[in-house]
Length: 453
Image 1 (cartoon, rainbow, N blue to C red):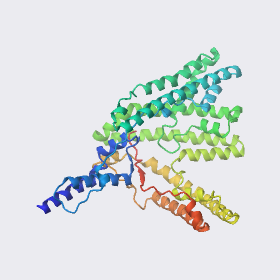
Image 2: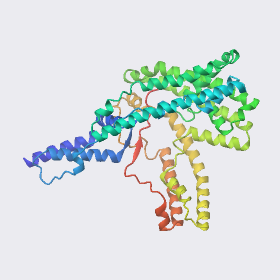
Image 3: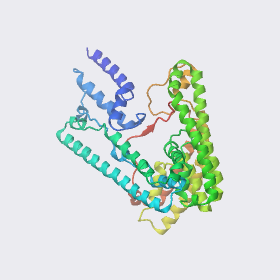
């Protein structure tokens, strides 16, 4: 009998270890906890969740001797996602965006002042309403936690707030039109074009697709658009980009559903739609690069260099994120206890590191871009090959270890960990303990395989 129970326990454990954390229950738990992307998993949390469930199973199977259930395994917790007023009640038009609209509408000083006053009230109203809703939610959460009753959170009526936020956001542009002259209103289609770019430029997938060159230029040199030669180049950019953004969005809207269906019924047809989408996306990225090259020589040397750096950073946002070793090395350089000799040594180490880092990131970026152009959704790859699509995900890369991109990532790890070790050797043991540790007790991975058109 004992052997039979042990066999059943082993069978149940194998099923739990293989399926529990990565199937629908775990995805729902992630979404309930407020995570927006259920494909991003904290592996340490997965292991603790599995272990808690396993210990509960062992406790429930009476007659198995020698099994002690940890006290924490007898408890469970749940996170409830709440409406976020600070993200919803946020100005749809930023100050930089407003400057762009006023420029294309050729608004004069007196109207600018009136619209500026209107904008201040608009932003203030959104902030005030966000604060009111935050207070309601915070009070409900505190009461529910004190009462140990999640029903008090569920009872809060949150459904209408999103629509209220949208109405408040749209009101500014409607009120702004009331302050414009007939001549300026005749240019309103230009403002609508600008708003399309401001809203849709960031909806890209390929490197360089999610760029708004107007915004970047405005951040780098706010007065650049005062010059006629710069304005002419950027006007051509705005016109060309607008047509490409509308074509891409129309393709995705018209064919997005058909693409998912064709993966199942007509993989070759799905592949054709995918290639159409890639061409539309690539055209946007190429226009961004083309006009960045055209406008850079028209700027000062400093502004041109800043524009180039911002373009690279916006094209490869994940790539420029510091690794733990890089962050540690830079934090170490800020220690107040460093001697002058240590400061000089660390400065030299970081200077040499930065030179190598820039070169390596450029190589990785080139390989990453080529990889993204050839990448296909895993469901489409499986359908074309006649195999079963992947179910679940355990954080493992789909790339072979000898893939060029993997080799370059390994090279980056060696570079970053190397500078950390060299800087650590410059510090005393006490100074090393002063640098914040990045150890978290869990590892986080994001499934970035493409889905949909």
